[in-house]
Image 1 (tube, one colour):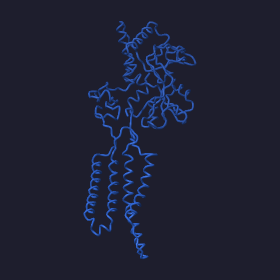
Image 2: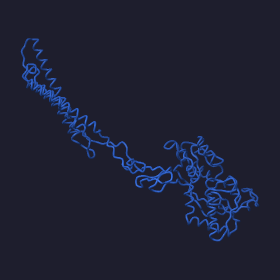
Image 3: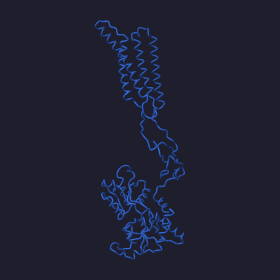
Image 4: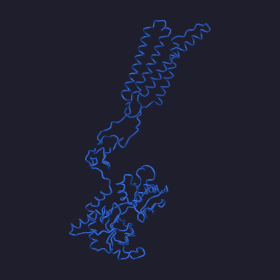
Length: 446
């Protein structure tokens, strides 16, 4: 029964595939027991039920119209048949040579979106492709009656209809679907599995009893010496390089702890913490801190500002006895410079960025304290001087003599600054700023 990869008709009277290899292994087991086992193969009908009729015990009946002479020609059907109750009444079965389930396949490009299982297909009212006339089709339709179905004459037609959008999923034997996904990267087998099945060969009940017993013995031997496991791996499993190796020929290194080879031989790191062609280079944690050149620039600006303040303060002190400086009131000029120095010093705690864990860090609240207090001293002094000028000019209009003392003006500066101090104090006590690191990307290895 031509059904890749279980049986592949080579077109020259020979067959390859899983069952072709299994037949050759059985012949080898027979030779070990001094038997010459030869299989005379003939192509069977393309439909499973029609092929089964050729070895069934109910020939020449309404259910099986094949003449008895036709049924007596064959001893077994070399095909991937599910054993079920109805078939057991009509034929004998070989030992189980594979275990499988029913599943579905989808287009891999739609991973993460769209319909991915037959259960979802049922609720969405979608269409699934199924092989026409197969026992599997009956099971799928009975289990998911809410879906629509498109019967395909053969698996190749189902795949073509899946890719053209006629159906969203193609339901079939999981092993057959794995084989197709193995050879076609655009396909992906879903994780939905249902109705475990056991694959057997239908045997004619008229088969020579001695031949039947020996055939079953050699099939059991293929189970015992892991022949079936070997063939299953060759035909249905993705081939990966051994642990610690990668490359198209598995001749390159891949760190066995931090990497694994994929189906293309590429060494894929198990975590973003590791990189390199062989996943042996550890990636340093990116703390997203200020680069050193930015910190150096901030300190440089603060140094320039401090130098400017010192130069201005020195000049005021040097010229303190001149009439022009006396009129400007040196005391308040010093206060303006002090406020500038205090507010600009807030840049120092602003660039502090290291802490163990999350929580209160003194540098966090020092920044608003320095900036606010420095701002209040600077503009409080300017406001006090403007108020003094205003009082003097207002008194000049009425030709009155007034005196605004330094102490009186300084108290105004203190009043303005105390408001900022009070606000910062409440802020610090009730809800202080806290240092926190936000992780933007992580994996299982953090």
